[in-house]
Image 1 (cartoon, rainbow, N blue to C red):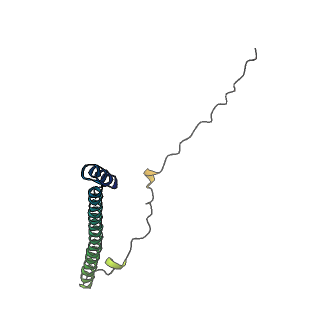
Image 2 (image 1 turned 90 degrees about the vertical axis):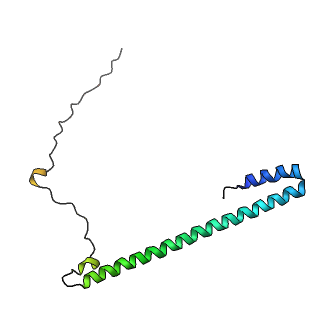
Amino acid sequence: SRLTDAGIQATESLSSHVLGQQSGKMLGTSLRAGKDLVDTVNSTRKLNMKKLSVKFTKKARDGILSELAEKNKQPGASPRAITSSPGPLTTPPLLASEKPEEISVPPSKKTSVHKRHE
């Protein structure tokens, strides 16, 4: 929740000075309880959404698989539609016109550095 512990402490401290020590502590306790409740509701909501998402994803997957199975049962359908997996990825061979060019690099000229002794 947007209510932070520092904000609750600041509110509790301020209200203790204005309303009195006991009232300030009661207000701080109430705010903490409210924050805990909001945090619990939010985390529960996230868990429920995650469960629903997984449930609907599984149902969608099962529906697609059964639909593909039905299509494969029809005459003339290829049974490989579901069971086959793509083979390993390979690069196609190069055509004669696509062969990589060899680049010749001339040998570097050796240069010597002479130090002058003065």
